[in-house]
Amino acid sequence: MSHDSDFDYYENMAHWSFDEYGIHEECLTDWDLYGLLKGLARPDSRILDLGTAGGEKVLEYYPDCAEILGTDYSPNMVETARVNLAKSGRKNISFKVMDNLKMDVPDDHFDIVTARHTITDPVQILKCLKPGGHLLIRGVDKHDCWNLKLIMGGGQGYNDPVPVSITDYENVLRAGFADVELVPIHTREYFRDKETFKAFLETVPILMDDSIEGGPLDEGLLDEYISKNTVNGHIVLYRRYYGLSARKP
Ligand SMILES: C[S@@+](CC[C@H](N)C(=O)[O-])C[C@H]1O[C@@H](n2cnc3c(N)ncnc32)[C@H](O)[C@@H]1O
Image (cartoon, rainbow, N blue to C red; front, side, top):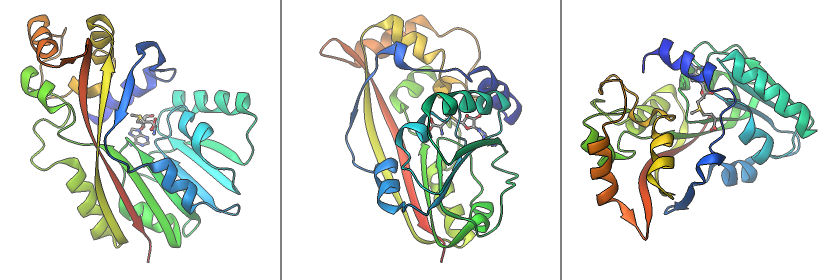
């Protein structure tokens, strides 16, 4: 998707929830952003979460500390996050509209910056971290759902010359971070039937990309995928994410 169509997509998704799909997720690897965050955070920590969406993850998983700021370039997402915050009763958390590529936060201010499934600029992140501060990124990699993308002939990242994990990794190194680690994350998602699987694929960006024709999903190709990837009565999606951790020297 282009930057503009990405923006419209997220503006329209401000009230999303995947609960209705009843997805069962199995994680095959153990890099866990929230676990690492809990290990790093102290009561006086200041945390910035980039591309926070409706703040659901911040409100559920981020530990209590001095300051948590969640930002998103979609005003609708930030509006949803503020509503969710009011319902949560949590303290020291705020949300604001901000483009990750035009960051507007103080220099040398945060102890931890997190970014989950969103675009980042490591140079700008480095500036806003205190010396010794930590960066935690989780992203969706090029080979996410690769067997589905091969059948469909395209999808997110399909034509990327280099997987986004490698581009991110190199950008974090080039920005000047230390202790940079890139870790693959493999999960499986199980769907109960074709109807929910199809509805999910029509909602998420996995198959939405310039590499693939727009329009309805090809039923024949979808059936081919389902016949090859149904295990114990459940349709399986093979997810490929990556985790990146780094420290400001
Ligand atoms: C896939 S969602 C991930 C949301 C959340 N981080 C999570 O893990 O559930 C991506 C979010 O990044 C936001 N986003 C995308 N590009 C952005 C940019 N350039 N600046 C700020 N936010 C952006 C979108 O509006 C959306 O809320």
